[in-house]
Length: 247
Figure 1 (spheres, rainbow, N blue to C red):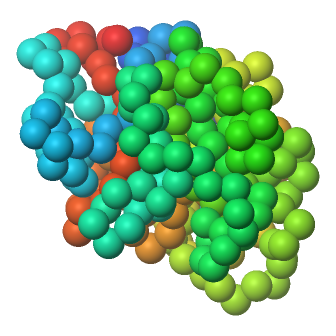
Figure 2 (tube, rainbow, N blue to C red):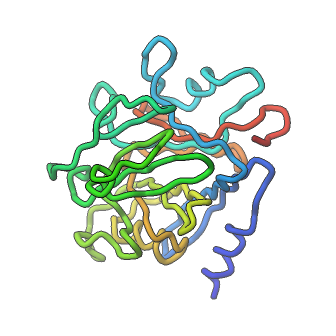
């Protein structure tokens, strides 16, 4: 009952900018979950500046925004190589930088099934990578990462409840109708099973995607948070009006 009340409060809060963040306790661990209403928020991916240099930090993303714009809720948005280029599919504003990868391989990215976050016009979807490759949807922005956390309502089959692989982790889930996107970061180290259950059992998202661990960062000005650290690769963020806080 307590979880249902907390979830209802998270979903009911719809600020002017279409975004709200709350710290939530789930099965003994704290998480910060940000709810983005895509009907009322402009969500973008960011990787490079106009000269091709990778941005890598929330402050540098802010520097690229236009007059009167500011960065709202944001987080790192997928795995990257040492040069911070995306490991898998990456599309920004309709332009593809990296192709989709559908083969299995080492590391979390290669723990199939992995998936793609696809941002369209006022809607989002998390799609298993091979299904995406077979029938690519029209994505204005897209980033591939892995593993999938939740797949059509089920946890990834390789996750172990008692795994001792613990990390700070971040990921995204999308509501069944595609109108709401949740950016989530664990505020203490958790395993994949615990992290996936937060999306499935607490947020009720039918599909969710792991973005990364250890390097996880969240920018949430509404709650006075902006994580710092060494630069990352792709960044997912809401763009809002600097004066009113609305889109």
